[in-house]
Length: 107
Image (cartoon, rainbow, N blue to C red; front, side):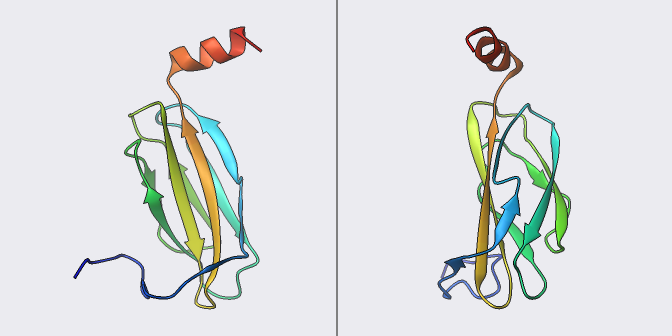
């Protein structure tokens, strides 16, 4: 079978935890602190999509750091969950410096 970093991959999680910020546009290599709210026990973090090649400073804790990878024009999705099956997500839009300049010029 398929291996998963999730302790209970067969459990259906309910979106009811908040991860802040819930979405952010970042440049490659940029670090963003992710904070979780509403969990009742230890919070676990993992990527559900990691198209930029980003990283997480830790897999557990109320707050961790997300670091955007080097592959721009992608959205990374980080999920947080706890033992009570509460779930939260954040979306990191990784853009290149060129895309950033284009967006700023066309506001």
